[in-house]
Amino acid sequence: MEILSGIFSAFGLSASAGLNAYIPLLVVSLLARYTQLLKLEAPWDTLTSPWIIGLLVALSLVEFFADKIPAVNHVNDGIQTFVRPVAGAIVFAASTQVVTDIHPAVALAAGLLIAGSVHVAKAGALRPAVTATTGGLANPVVSILEDVVSTVLSILSIVIPLLIGVVLVPIAAWVAWVIWRRANQEAARA
Image (tube, rainbow, N blue to C red):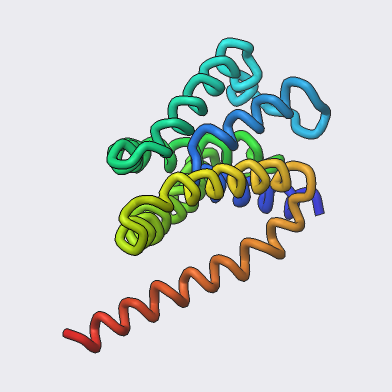
């Protein structure tokens, strides 16, 4: 059961990193430093350093405000295309309790793919649709919602990791279905 909890926790944190790179890193850092909920093994215990926590707070604030300003949010998403998958790889490898049983390269690749997929769905489908339908006026509201979801998902991934399996599996299936349906519709048009 502990292995399953560690894997669900890692998947949830990686998905959260696809929405906001710094929130799950900050949640992991704070919970590992100030609670007994999470113990990070070397080299990931570096995340509990006060300097790293301070840096993550600063980066979280920069991303929070950059993502609320029209036009700047698109530049931010472009930059985050590289940052979010890396953050997902880090939290996946750092948070899984079975990192010693899984080769670190596999853990990093899994986190990279999960966070990258969530980011692509967000930046490549959700945000352009919101921008097109509202003229960009709803982007700050959607951004705040993404930050809230990222924070809640990060905390739940550590506190109640089995809930993540129950929640993420249906969401992942739905996203895959939407992508498959869109591809079939585009193929039918062509």
